[in-house]
Structure formats: C-alpha cells, structure tokens
Length: 217
Image (tube, rainbow, N blue to C red; front, top):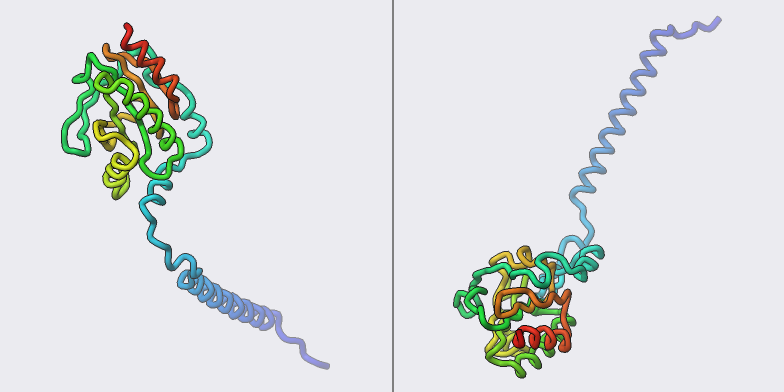
C-alpha cells in the first residue's frame, strides 16, 4: 500500500511554488517597467526649435468657444468712457490715452505674425489714416508675449504699417481692461467715449462712420 504525502507537506509544496511564481512575476514586472522608463520613442527625443511664427501661432491658439467669444461685444461698450492707460511704446516713449483727448484714437489689438485678419485690417486703417491724418491717432498693441515679439512688431510696422503710428506690447493689461481676447479695434472719440468696438476687426466703412460721427459732434 502506497503512503500518501501528509497534507501539511503538500500545502508547503504548493506554498513554495506560489512564492517562487510571485517572485518571478515581480522581477519580470520591475524589469519591464524600468525598460519602459528608459526607452522613449525616437520622436520624443528630439524636437525642432520653434520659429517665431510658430511661437506666435502657439501663443494665439484658443479653444473653439474662446474664438466664438471674440465675436461678442463685451467689456466697456459703445458710449462708455474708455479705460485710461499708460504703456511704453516700442520707441521707448510713454503713451497715456488721456493725453489724446480732443482727437480720435483708434486702439488696435493685433498680432504681428501669421494673422490674415490683421493683414486686411491694416490696409483699412491705412486708408482711414490717409484721409484724416492729424485728427486720428492709431495705437497698435499686441497682446502676445514671446521672445522676439518686439522685433516682429517693428518689422510689421516697417513693412505694413505707418511710421506715424504708435506700436507697443501690452504691458498694461489692456486686453483685460477692454475685454479683448486677441484682436479688435476700438474707436475712441475726442471726449474719451467708445464709439465703436470691432471684434475681431472693423472694416473701412465702419471705421469711417465712427470717425465722422466723432468729428461732427
């Protein structure tokens, strides 16, 4: 008659087998995790340096709902007193809105690189400026903040704008004061009241109508 192994011995054997299996699993799992941490896809190891245009494009990317919000006329509306501000222009001078009382001010929020809307808007602004000249002040402000934005603004001024205009980077929080996300045109009358809010732009006829209203008042 064959002797059967003791239940205690059988249980010990099974337990030993389980312990060995668990230890092997933990060792293999640790090696796999370590390999996953050390091995990265080739595309993650090297990324090309972004150009200025790409930096500007990345800065101005917004969710779809924010793009729609650009079209809404919010913030200080037409007929309200425009919030005063002081900021430094690219030429180093200090610009204060209230100093231009008695003249029409066109406050243009723009993007100097990669903006089709701005390419159209600047042409309408130049037409307006050529018609009204010393009765209109144009202040071009960019809300973007990236390395080289000042150089891009100056290049835009030389190639697209007018030398008489004022160019600046928004260091005074104007986008918050005027509730502008990226682009827009604010026409401010001689008394300091907002006559037009064009979001994200205003065409030639809209600008002309607002300026004629201001000058005839």
